[in-house]
Length: 466
Image (cartoon, rainbow, N blue to C red; front, side, top):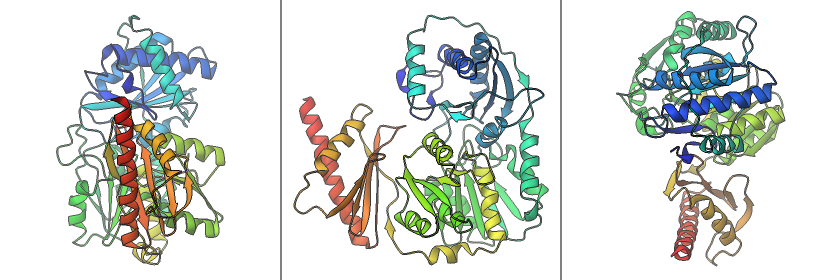
């Protein structure tokens, strides 16, 4: 039996052996192949596939390739690569072949027993209803048998990517400031230190060896506990630090004074652009939106790498950003999230004279919480958001004054001196909350009052089910 829960909003993801196994992965390859044939209007479309450092990724590559071959596709295999390199491959010719679709086999920042597939067809994210429909089709056809056929053509994308980056950032050659990177035993160093060395940059590196068991720390740089090594290094003579998640599409950027989140990175980049159009997600600080709107246009949209890529293309915006460190450059790049590319754009800001800490110190002071997660269930989380929206229409007398409610993704409640967010995670059974105010006590009040609303909504739903 195939577990429907592996078919998620942004990708396909599950526990290897239990949920992602020979049967399910071969079927995923086969039906993705048929979908690519349909969308590309080609009998034998070209699929490029790469994978991360997880111990089971090569095995899943074999199963997936068998499914694509059964469908009649031509598979190009690039081996172990970063997600940004995988996306990059979709824009390159390999002989006469221009890829029609790509799959990155990765569990991203999940624990080591997980793996999954990030998919594009025609350089567009394959997500949401497309993934759910694919899952329904597979579940109805589990009796289909697919023989082993791991035939594929090996391609070298890494050399093309390295050459591109070295040429694009040649002006940084010999840059003096000293920095440190933490690859987290993910796949960042399938390319990054080669680029750094060719540019003769002044750096040191931690945990470069790809190891899917992640022996040194969990590969999620959005959690400060996973940054302790580079934070300790910054007490010495390093000026900056960069850290990456398991598949190197998310970046952490630190100075001696600041852990610079993705929304503030977007704001720093916007200061160098003329009439910038920048897309943020609902968790981004209001400062980002307000400051960018002074010189350009800031657009608030849904959380999620697929959502932001689609919106970026729709608006032909300069860039998009998530607080967690997904940074999408359409300016001088291809419009996808690539933490390695983002590293060099950040170094470029420094090379061009930006004092990052001074820029951040000049921003209005706000008090923001990290993401705070409220445990719930897959069945309950979206019902809770609907119930919270309902309760916001008739709040208690002591509830802070509401100026506006933005419901593009969950609910972002705008108060007089800040905001509070409640949204359902699309990948885990939790509600994600975040709070911000120009006054610390107000941020705490928003957190308290919205949590009371969440608790009331949970109680009502559970009483109804009983």
